[in-house]
Length: 382
Image 1 (cartoon, one colour):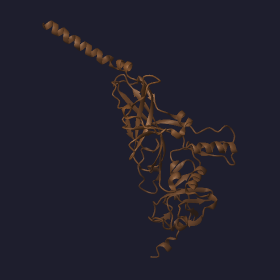
Image 2: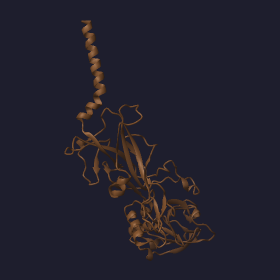
Image 3: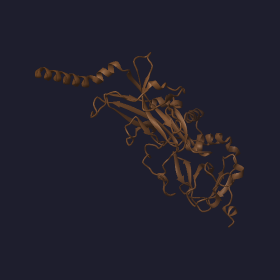
Image 4: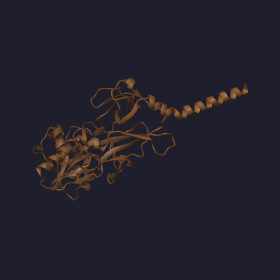
């Protein structure tokens, strides 16, 4: 009797061990086949994660969800492995809730997160030769968790470690809450938890898909309010420099890249700002101001300088961003968006300098006439 019990227990143990070893293979034979992956974006306030391009107000939190699609054959419905509770694709149709499942298969998974960015912030094009789109790369975000869902950011891979600037002279450490960022995920499936190499990697759309279809690529565009919106959207994109008097074909090619939000030029930034404000550059009302404290910042709809205003000296045009010097006064320590060799946030003293330098300023706000620059002394006679 004891021998029979011993052998019975032994057989059960062997069968259990065999089942444990064979379980992943059995799963693969009966469960739908893993085929492709996507990145879905869930914005705070919207419960649906979307595989699409989304626009948000700067600073709005959002979450990135990895999605893996599986099906038994080409005619079978998709099953989506994801931690997102609701899901929709670029066509707007929401996926049925019973087709969304958290990962429950026995094989361990690691999700690697990437951002899709230009290799260089600025690329200058030659007058001759075939124009090439600036090089795009999928950049690993090694400091992000290897999880199915992560908190998103529009910060670029090369400045994600930066903190907010604490002084006007420290504009190199301004952490952006605005701009454009695109996302890519690779879902790595391992045989065992401690394996160094995955047995299968399923990747979402990458650089080639972005170039083919930029309109629906998983992208977050975080915009500042008001006239600064279009100027803030290009941060994170590579800038293209055109040669003097470019050929019409070259100019048209670059304009098409800007329309697809793959690159930008200073002209495209100003074009988008003017279009949003329903203005024409030739009709703007430019006034002379001095960066030594002549003009006050507006406190609302009243007169004075404001974020989104344009400043220029000669052919260099910048977009006013933030009061960072003497509070309430437009001066050299205030910040602007500068587009010389890539989009940068710079203090005005790093753009122009000189005692009594005459700078022209114009407003793109609807109440431009009411907000023309006002001398500080006149606004505060005391």
